[in-house]
Length: 109
Image (cartoon, rainbow, N blue to C red):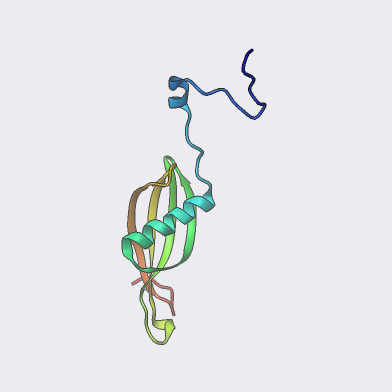
């Protein structure tokens, strides 16, 4: 008697074919979340939000706004934007602070 495969089962790819398969690409939402996680881990600062997510040649560029220094009143808080480059698997490729400014005026200093 021969074994039967259920309809849901797919044949397994050979080693060569499996090596050619690429992992599912990140979506913009997932890339943004990964960017937030990387900035939070590296800076230990409180994240305010994501200011942009853009596709790049080999992954994503994510801009993340953080609170660098809390002040009273909060209009005096110092905020910064970090640019994070991640690959299609969500691994960090690079990051840097691109601007720093007071919450009250939004202008970089």
